[in-house]
Image 1: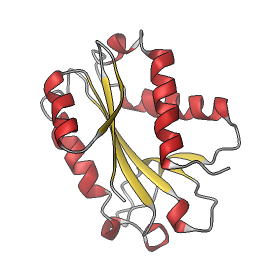
Image 2: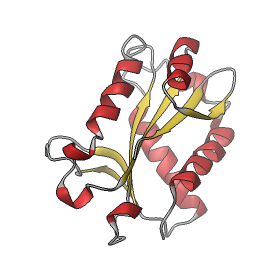
Image 3: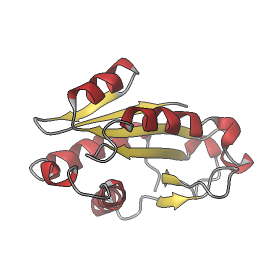
Length: 160
């Protein structure tokens, strides 16, 4: 089954509400928490509807060494229904480069960087921050906050 961009954002909000008390334990972890978040969000979405087409670390870029964090609706023959999302999670280790990483992911998702089969797909970047300066940067750069509590904020920016 297909999922829309707005449905994805809504499910991320639901997931964050369920996990909200735990986030403060993740961002201090050495080695980061992005891989955990990838799997955790995917599992949450599938727990809501196991027919949703979601892939992790999928090759959509012309550079075969790069992978997109999530690809939705890959089975749909209409490329415009596919949704590619990059994820960044702020941690103690990347706190000074987090916003640069978000900007780099935005550039990475430029349609010209995608394989021909994925050019025209919907794209977006999701960031999870714990520092107010990073949250403010996301808001100033057109990320829509879909969740915010005392510990973290989650912003999603639709690119295409």
